[in-house]
Length: 333
Ligand code: ATP
Image (cartoon, rainbow, N blue to C red; front, side):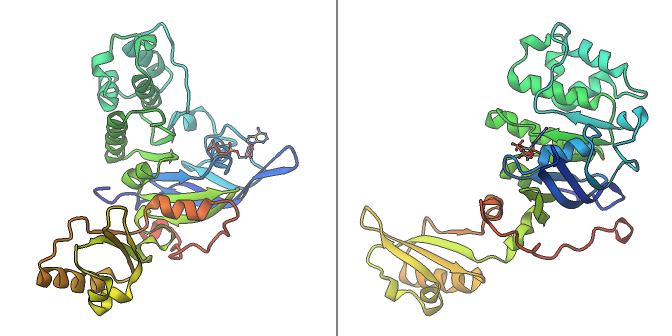
């Protein structure tokens, strides 16, 4: 993301949160988290990990079994209507009034809030200006979703809960939704995002937290989650015709993880190195000296999805947070 934000006061603090359903199954097993004003916070985890349970507690829709929760300075379990007017909630599926136009719908909802955002401004924010006079039933799936978001924004919330905002979107609608969320962030709205799309989290989030089986298994900025930035890089290329692995310079040979003969007689080489420049330098010098081109040369660090899958695969041990997360004290900002 662009300008760093989210360095200010704490908008959500959770400590030791537990939720036990039916006196038996513990869906949330003692989690701590902090969301700072102005940041996009992505909450990730596989199906059944405890995300919805946690989010519903933060939204004040569900009682908890134990733990301390503060959202916009109040405990959601006891907060009143003035607190609720400061938050926006976009559920996975909502039902706007079917017979009203987009503008009428927004006008109706605006009446529920003490200081609503303007109708035109809200439609512009979500890209629905052209559909102002269309009824909800005439909207496409993506436009309906935008209306859901518009309805959650009409009260001019400080904090927005977005639950899987782009599920079912085509690639261009997803990009438009991302732009919209980035726009909200630049307006200073704090966004608590739940998503199953790692590219979405990577693109939008300032801070990512992964929950698995009711426990937090990793937290941090998307670029460094799970020590990702320190993991060995993978370098791949096809060995030029006539060249052999033995001909490669020493630092490159030492990093060879495998070299295989491809189906068309070419050799695919995979190098692994925690210091990729120390391998790439000699490799490129060797290729230039020998007049080889390496057209498919690629350097790749583990993606957020690679890290996420390793953290959440069944039976994975919850690793220590790596790098260790510094306490997020607002006053230290
Ligand atoms: P998904 O990605 O599928 O939406 P989630 O991470 O949001 O999953 P939750 O909906 O919080 O997961 O569910 C966590 C666990 O709690 C699951 O095992 C689920 O079956 C269980 N659970 C959720 N709601 C209830 C309920 N009302 N009563 C009993 N168990 C529940």
